[in-house]
Image (cartoon, rainbow, N blue to C red; front, side):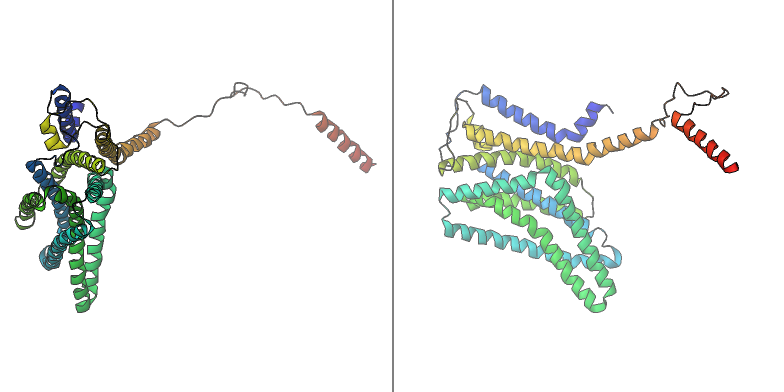
Amino acid sequence: MTATGQSLRRHWPLYLGGLLVALLAWSAFSAHGGTPEPGAGEHLSHGAVVLDSALLVFREGLETILVLAAVTASMVGAKGVYRRPIALGAAIGFLASVATWFLAAWVLGQLGAGGLAVQAATGLLAVIVLLVVMNWFFHKVYWTGWIQNRNRQKKKILAGAESGGVDGRKAAMWGLILLGITSVYREGFEVVLFLQNLRLTYGAGTVLEGVALGLTLTAAVGVVTFLAHKHMPYKRMLVLTGVMLGVVLIVMVGESVQEMQLAGWLPETTVALAIPGWVGLWFAVFPTVEGLVAQALAAALVLGSYFGAEYWRIKRPRRKAMAVETRKDAPAATPALNPDAPRIGEPVEAEPRSVTGAARAQRASINDATTAS
């Protein structure tokens, strides 16, 4: 396989995302009329809000399934009984996420859910959450460590169950329940924080349609994974949903900047750029300097973190390994020859003694002669 083919196979999601960005840029610069007004109220279409909500729920659901699958992979045979407390904990974590949704809605209602400042604040929070979700370096380092941490906790709990008798098994059951709760609630909490801005702007009904769609897709993958015991291409699915969430990030940044402008937190500098109406409805791209710059910076941050993760995970170790192999294969260094040194077989001339050495020898002979006399 050629280098181009390998690059396409490894980085096709990035090329796909770049193609989408290029198409959007071409549409923006070649359009005439239909520019969305940044100061208007709602911008995203109903379908865009549903799709954005579903994508985030599905993405976090995939991560939850991957964590639970890694934790329960070794629970076969006699250890299969330990799957039940983890499943119970996962159900409790899901219910706790639902309760957090209602709690967040109540708190925001007490703060004034319809206020522009509240919408701007929740929009900024949603962007931060999405940046954390999208950050490739974060997922390569921290999230991988999270899975390893879950596995270590599982092993510790099971070791206690085997050596602690009845009390140890009871403690292990509670520990596995807690493990299931934290594995699910961590992702559910992120989803709740992200969706509050969309709920305040477009209504709970529209957002819940997307939530239902995302949960349906997640449940389908869960059934295939845990009931049919089929291995699915989780990595490719995560990469594909990650590319889609990259588009959602651009949308949320544009929406948040527009909300902060309406709240008076940011200035509004318009540019003479014709943007089609459908681009504003689906991607929240508006002709303002602040919004366009913020969206470009968000895209650069995500792409930079991806290439940074690729460098630290693949290219840097590969370069170190190549440097070590190069040092091993290099011939041993030979000492430099002195051109004045005598060659083998040549007589070596005695070096003249120094004046000090001659005087010392003469003094020693005089002393010997005096002693002898």
